[in-house]
Image (cartoon, rainbow, N blue to C red):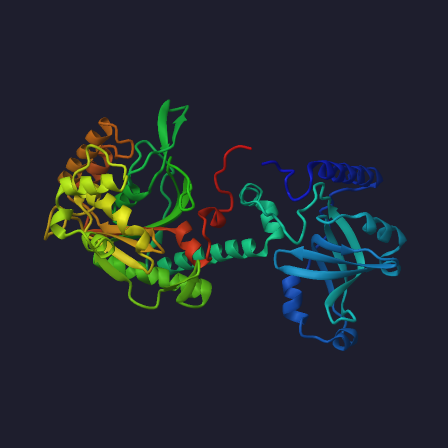
Length: 501
């Protein structure tokens, strides 16, 4: 894929670029280019908010002056007067450019300007014969020259690769793309406001770690030259946030990037945004209720409703989210298996082999159950569902259940067949945590690249005493996908990771 492939043949585009560069050379030779002294006083959207209901007679009786700036997206050149559509962040406004109003020289220059050029314009608002609110220009200036042609306006960017690689063009041409990212900003702000309003302190923790931890994933590796040591881009902020709980910050959250050196898919990007929060004297049942509140609040704030459509199917946040154990979820969507069979590693292995699932030799019952869940149930969990009762084998940072020490007090939230959140009662027993870290270290030694490292400093922090606590991480990108009805995670990340051109 080339930058030239924007619905214009490469030969034609090269010719257009050459013509525009020649115009830039003329502009450069004739005076001040790329000026920055034009003072915009109002945006297109605000013009319509203030004056959109006024009639032509009202605008004539009480003239309204406006100074506006933006990009030319449409242009109709006629004899002594022409029209152009100017676009800014807030919307669009039609410009009426008449030779007797702006002068011979300016009008001649305007006729040579191109679609994509950025201009400043000033004049009086009026309504055309068709009733369209427009600006009759008394002044219009070229502020920035567009050397490359925009995509053809009726089709825009038709190649998804182009949309992601040249997001700037996607935002110029595609109003739904702009709206999705505006919605993302509102969703993030609503979550931040919700957390602060409930007494949580927003904090920032390191993005480069001496030991990767807080999740099972392959890290990105870098190096600090002055210290002559390897560092790892963080895969999760969890262990640093829990150090803050030890230090007495009893309610903390962080919303920032994580980095995981794994494959890409419609649900995965190597860098992604998470919101993690931790609360002292809390536990996983309370956190499930709280997580539900967060997501419901964000949906109301962003959409104005709690029931919405995603990819043609309804998702309802107005009702309490369903709760299932891991094994119950498997049996619900794979009804020919029993509780006894799900506790039998031989049966699990045989069943998973028949499904062509990827089984690792070191997997025990807990890991096999989780794989069975992923193969049979996860994609079926369309309506919001908390899955609980995760095996301790696959939950190295979660507190063991008092009823069954083989399980943990952990939940994952699934919506539309994908994981949205993961939380648990925190393991604050330093000796138990040390044993689990050792088990992870042994798994890493036998080839499990996603297993955790042994973090001695975190164990030392726990030895000073961490109160009973609960913590949860929410995948912001996947949640934004839901609320903006986006099928691909790249549609909600401004600049997703791409292969080099």
